[in-house]
Structure formats: C-alpha cells, structure tokens
Image 1: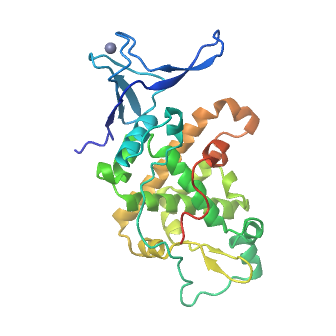
Image 2: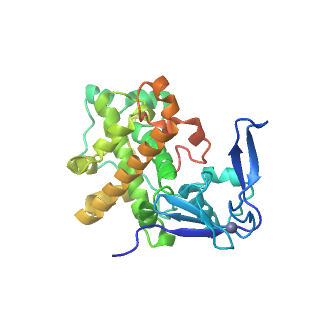
Image 3: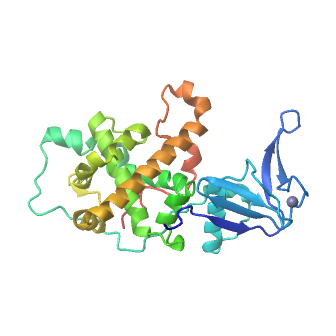
Length: 306
Ligand SMILES: [Zn+2]
C-alpha cells in the first residue's frame, strides 16, 4: 500500500518566529523564536507534517509538538520552497495559496447545439438573474471563487488530500482543479434549491451532503448559465465541460471524493475556528468562505475564465 500520509519536512534557516500568548504578560500576544523545550535550541530546527499532525525536531534529536506549528503551516512553507518564494514574514504564511496551477486554455464553453432559452420563471429560479443584476456575475462564478477559497484552506491541512492533489507529491493538478469545480457546482445547486442567491451563505453541511455519491450524476449534468444583460452565457470552462462529459467513472469518483474532502475539512476547520462565534451565528458551519480572513487571498472572480 502506498504512503498517503503526505509527509513533508522543511528545514528552517536561522530562527523561526512564532506567536505566543500569555494572559499575565503585557502585551499578551508577542513573538518569540521557536525553541526546543528540552535543550532550548532555536537554530537548525526541522518542521514535519504527517497526515493532519505536525511536529518539530531539534538538531539534538528532540521531537515535540508546538501549537503554533500546524500541519497546514508546514505544508505552506514547503510549497513556498517548491516555488522558490522566500518567507519574508512567517506570519504571512497563513495566506499562501497552495492550490496547484493548471496551465490550460480557460476559454468559456459555448452554448450546446439545440440549447433553448429557459422560460421567464426558470430564468429567475435557475439562471440567477438576481445575482447577476447585483454582481454582474452568475451564481456559479461566485461559487467558483468560494470553492477555491475552501480548497486553499483545506488542501494543506490533510496529508492524503495534499498527496493526491499536489503534482510535487505525485498528485494531479487536474484533479485539484476538478475538485474545486465540483465543489462549486455543489454550492450552486444548494443555492438554486434553497432559493438563496447569495452563494456565500450556503451552509457547508448542505454542500457536503450535495457531494455525496447519490448526487454525483446530477452535479455532473449541470450546465449553469448566467444572464448578464441581454445574453445567456455559460459559466463553465469549455475544457471542464469536456472533462465532465468524458471522464470515466473512476476518474469522476476521484474528483467527487476530493471535493467532498475539501468541504469536510473546511467544515471541521471552520467549526473549530468559529466555535466561539457559533452562538452569535446561530448555526454551526455557515460557509465562512465569506470570512474576511480569506478575503485577503489574491483570488477574485476572474481566475476561472480567460
Ligand atoms: Zn532539543
């Protein structure tokens, strides 16, 4: 059986500053070099991520867990080293986008031959005229932005997902891309069915349910069309329409499973991170892709199409 732990190691040159918190200290939040709790070495440290766990190794052979070194942080650091980017500020690592780039033509799909315009009611219900009026973008386009943000959050958390979707680990950039597309299609379908045209407010638990195997064929057959002023415009890439139409069942199942994992991990992470806010939100697992924290990523509504 092949190793699916997604294990990576990164050697730190010099000190590695981490955030600390002490209630009785002024200020309570401060930065300090990461150091071995046994021998106090703060130089020559190695960070390790394996599955969803992480550890730190000092040059004298001590190993420990540090709450400020999450597996996702280690994998983001490794990603930065793959892409030759220097880590100027360790606190900025949390914003590193590790979704692999897929170098291909991003042309918009054409309307299929024989496609007929939906009736007025269907336009309003399925063609998201509401959101396009406000945002000049269709529902799926918005969902693609949020789905990519979820992938940014989830991908480095889990070693198995990391290994399957990172080309540097033997994974597939196409699988990573299609997992985001399927996640977006699931968000789209949840929004259409609920009549909530703010796709960013779709509950992650519903998106997760939509990605179950029994809904896969329905998601695969979706062809979202936006309605900017005076014309109908397909929202999917031509290349994705081709892939969705022709992928064999094993390949499609791989994409579905990766999409489900992205959503589940985001849900787990979200519930942990926002437990303190749960009472205020009134509902666990609201899609916090709208979270301002993730708005700072360099993504937008234009990444998907030419
Ligand atoms: Zn030590």
